[in-house]
Image (cartoon, rainbow, N blue to C red; front, side):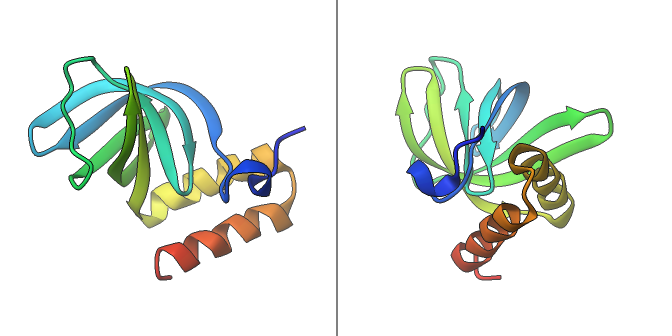
Length: 125
C-alpha cells in the first residue's frame, strides 16, 4: 500500500527511473529521474555537475511517447550524485500528467485532491 504524504512528507514522491534533461545557466546536463511529486524531484546527476541552490533550472522528462513533463526547479540538497529539487513551476499539461500518475499511485481521488490543494497553497493558486 502506498505511503500517504502525511506519513513523512506533505507530498507523495513517485519512484521513477527515466532519462531526464536539466537546463540551467551553464547549459543542459543529462541525468536520471529517481522520484517525482508535485513539490519536487530527485535526480541522479554527473559528479562534475556544479549547481547552485538559488539558481533556477528547468526539467524535461519523457514519461511516455508524446508526454513530456516540464517543471521549474530550485536545488535544495545534493549528496553525491543524488540531488533534490523543489518545484518552482509546473505548466498545465505537465500538472495534468503528474496528477494522472498520482491517481494511479493513490487510487483515491480524495488523497489526490488533498495534494493538489496543498500544491495550490504553496504555489499561490
